[in-house]
Length: 479
Image (cartoon, rainbow, N blue to C red):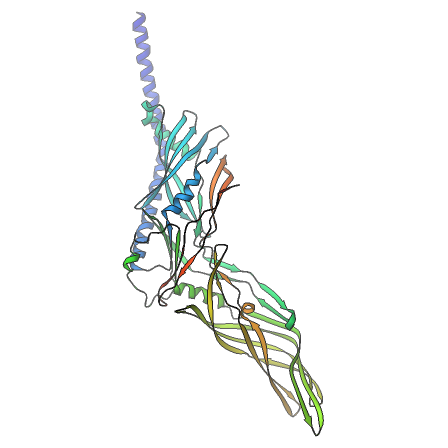
């Protein structure tokens, strides 16, 4: 009778346990349903982006291309080793190891972790699918979604435990987004530059302006060697562009260890046109410029000293032409400058004092080389030191006479053109979360990148300017 009673209790316990596990499984599966739907949507969007990127590569219809090498991605994502996230209730995830898996069409991060949850405490192997996401400001983020979670304990109930683990890790202990050190900024703001050249009593103002890059619809394609990111300027004149990529640029053919950036030459030329688009590129003013004209003459044996000063000068210069060219030595730009200046001309001529208004419309053309340099990892378009002369053809009436002379106003290229930073398509620091508490990132691991760019120029105006840099990483900094 006792044995029968114990047998009944055992059978009842098994039934109750089975029902509980079945209910638990149904509950977790219900919880996972919305997450699976989200994963499906992310996968579909990722696949569509990848197909669009491959089509752009094959047709060569992109204007900016960034290749991110496998070693670079491995370096950034391996910094998740030591990552920890906690909740108020004591739930915890600690990453012991992190490994990147790159396959055709997707990226995955496999981690070995210690997990502390309500119904499970111990080691687990967790796989995250990685999706690339672009923010409105052009920054590039990696979004991690739990795809698999395999507990290393309680293997008998693994089929019931795994869906619950996936749900809890994603909902309670998610890994925050990771900011890649690159993106597609759509515009850059140049600050106003206001300087006074004391030696010439001249004030020069370069107004603030916003340069639009018109790069839109970025596409991303993951392959076994890394990531390819592409963007297109839909406003760019594409006449004469090739409609098929070079064999060396077919999808999957370009393999880099660090970073490689290709900018279509016409995109860079379009950027310069944006820089020079305003009608008033340079504002000039001067309260007093002495001795702009001197002349010594003898009239009827009398020595006459003619001279002129400029007072209250105001006006502007308009860089109305800025055409970029490729030559065997590098890049140069044809500048065409017009302007308008007015003020007072005062002095003495032929024994008479005068103080008359004047207006001039100076103009000049010149060809300047463009230097593409890097400072602290940022690329700049810069101009060499070169003196320019602005010819002021001044004419004023003096009764029946006309005073006519030319004054050469000295200007330096650096005074009328400021360096342009190629927009922050790449940054000097990769940022990885270090510790999270209650969904708030309380520390990050900043990975400083040592970038040393090498430039390859195109053969003609229809090609790409390419910048490559090897992968050099300083010690990560925990903040």
